[in-house]
Image (tube, rainbow, N blue to C red; front, top):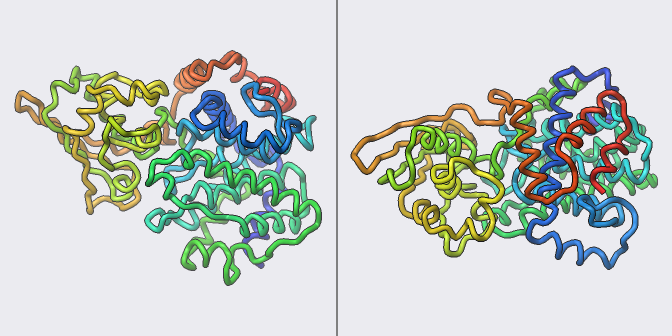
Length: 452
């Protein structure tokens, strides 16, 4: 039978007790992180216009987070997904890469609000873990095809979102397969919005989240979808993977949702490929080095890092997405300010001539053919100072990864930064406590009440 039956059957049969304690910890931390990112992003550029554009189709249904009223479930999930992803502060699976929570959580919470308002916290965490694991599993089994232009957050992540809803609703396996099939029929995801630096980038995953809600509705109504979702002639493997797929990666640890443990949370609000360079820039800052001390900085990274974040930065014309996807800008910020925060991506910060001139004129970024094409690490700095001294640095791990995980205090600081930036009325410790209460079985409504 098609692989869809394997992952769908697993999804609908999972229980909270199947999850290892570290998987529950990772799910809880990811949920705290994601909600903080969403509340920070509720006023991001483009969202007000999107809320206005969608309001013509109704203002009742599910919560639009941050106190922006209500909307039909697919549109509420769409808007909440945009706010979660807008600041590029949400989680990443470094090995693909893709954003998992941002694809799974908005639709799942809308589904809870619409269909299971009394949902138990453990049941919800189980569904969330199923979805995040599923998104990562499909992404890793297929392997990244970024060089062909696919956006894997969108393509693989939507599969996980369907599995999460299937588990929450406790569907029969066939219904879950039908929903996966419906999702296949509407899956697409080009990286061109990132290449062009357009605001469409922050809306793209949300389009798939909305489609997941539609797929679930069709399957629930008994409308069958394609059954050979993965292995069919025009299924996921042949269509997106050129027939190459690691079936063993789909199975290993499936019953424990083990991949959730391997997700990274971001310490900086920018593309994940900028994080290792930022780490090195902050090391230089801690050594007392500032932009005026540097004559030239030569940075060697992978080919995909150059594709994603290695373009020339022009501070006179750059937009927010250009800055979020720029090694040069984020490194210059880290070296000048000793931190990279959300406020570093507003209009005023982007036009800072000290940072912008340094990013444009004194940083060279080169693809090193000896490095893994799609790798985020290693990253190498060769820094020539004005006094003639040379400093060489290398990063082999990325902050926020499972190998260099954020401590609880760091996560709390991120929550404080996010809620402060978003001018949220929610107290950071109240949000953290509400999410942590889910593992004790407290109702999901206790979290939803903070988002309304």
